[in-house]
Length: 215
Image (cartoon, rainbow, N blue to C red; front, side, top):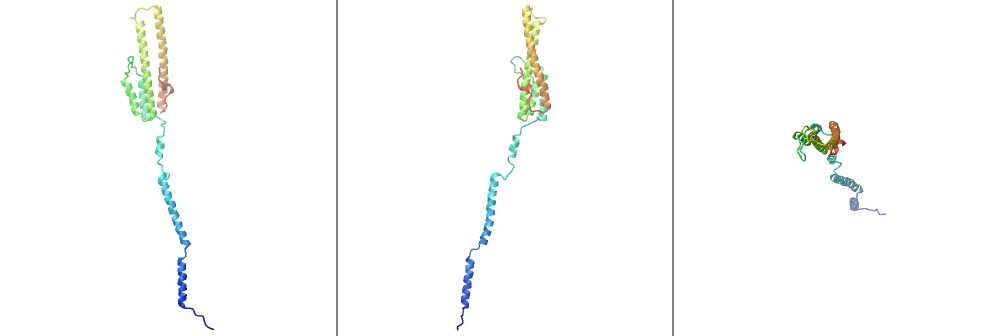
């Protein structure tokens, strides 16, 4: 019987071929590791892009919210100036000539001071109400002065003689005008009282008794 003989060179060739085959085979584990590294990078890039577009929950919108706030109380400086103007209006004896737009400088300066102190729409609205009340007070002063002068002209010592009928007509006229004056004065007194209380309470609301032009 003969013995089988294997050449050592052939064995070396076989091992080298097997080694090449192993090196040529794909390695799933290495590809899997590459994928797990790449995916977080993509997600991170998308997250950063969203932050740039949306601001990542920043508080940039907060200033816009504060600008919409409505003043609920008058400032102390404005309320003080408005109270001084209100008292000046109430005590103003100035009588403008009929058809004249002239006003008392002292009182107008008090109203102007309140206007300068106004820093909100609510305070400006109060200043507008003060001007309206002032014109109503001037109208009252004018009516009272006209009635007084008319009464003196008709019933004074130097008044011309009048018949009984004329006297009755004059009395009726003066009585009617007196009623109108008392009505205006009563409304203004209520307005002054309500406005004083409102300003001392720092309320931004103009009292209903002062909201419309008094006549």
